[in-house]
Length: 395
Length: 206
Image 1 (tube, rainbow over the protein chains, first blue to last red):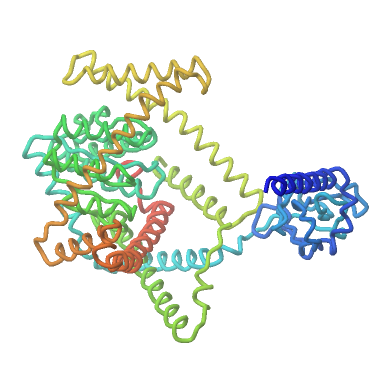
Image 2: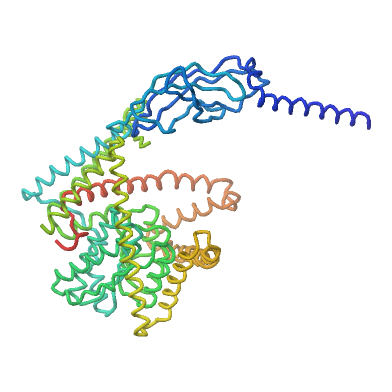
């Protein structure tokens, strides 16, 4: 028993020495492993990366075949300015891959030649080239988006022309927007301020721009009723725009004397400290009405629940689908998704603004038709035409 | 002119950036990069105004000993302290790191953790079965909650997890996608209104 254990240990030591020497040998004497490569790699595709700014080239190759006793680590990609070389190593790819994108200081409209070498050997693929990198003038992966954008814009402009000619458009009642005036009236009767939270979006976010249009209405009514509106801002840029919006609204209402820029202030650009500050305002100043309009994330429920606890009437609206249920649960009125964008048209009743709203409805109708056709053709006829039609590749 | 010039600038910038989205060529990419640099410059000046607003607001509260003025001292001390420590050392300043890791981060985590309690109180109100729709909501919530915990699978023989997956993957995703499509079109329509100067609220009144 004891002798067999000793023999086994010796055998293991012997195998370890063999394996170790073979690894060292591979590293030191690459050429000695050449005979183990039964078929060298072969570049089968060499092309300018499509839909880019022209600073990269893609290389694809057929994998090398090798003896099972020797598994190379990978491939080294080599590049030269002429087929004769000299070739510079520009990248490494593990043995399981056979695609490489060369971003290494590629110059536009310059000829390049490539070959792929197998690590631990002197084996390389035949030289392929020349290939040039060039920038494209249109991203073909975004064709669907482009076509739909053009159709949508054309439709909107056509409807705007009809709107200018005096065509009347119907817009369904939106409870949340109807409640705005009542909510401001309530705050005035109670002699308490109104809190308007424009969310965590930047001033250039569409949701924040939509919030500004409602803010204008709220500020105007507030000035007419001689009440106070508090606007804590997450971004300084939002604060500057909000100050301008509120100031103009007070001037329009004929009460520029009542405007106080200190009521529209910057808090912090940090999510939960901002939430804590707004919650503090709700609990200390006890505003009678809270507006949460714009972009909101995890803080939405914390804000809305605190407002509920403080006894305020609350109107919320966001285009973040995940946050909508939280607002629905904790607020009196919620503008769901696109209703937030519809507010400016709804409040102003301006035919031009209503016209874009109609274009939006037509856009939705077109999408629904395409989706139904896609479902029918894919399910009944097995055709993927509509699926490919809607495919967008932004990379 | 006071109105036309900003509208013209908005239209030109929006048009160029829209075209840039579809053109991957280097020249357009550079234009995008330059516009980002401009945004950063505007952002820097806006930050100065933001800090000024913050300091003046709190300073006034302290100066006139307004209600809760003591909190304003904490805010001003925090702002000054973190700025000084950040300016004196580099980003690896151990004092700055200590303040960040052992004061700011726990405060943020505390605020975030409140969410769990708020979810419970909001759910209690939302799930009261006062109407048919609220009852359906309550039932769906019970199924999803039981489907997400081991005891749900245990007591129903796998029925609750299966039902929860169906509710989450089909009606829920369908509603969410409908909202997302509406939001996409709404955002496009709003952008068009801004580009064409129909929507001008962000510049002040009409």
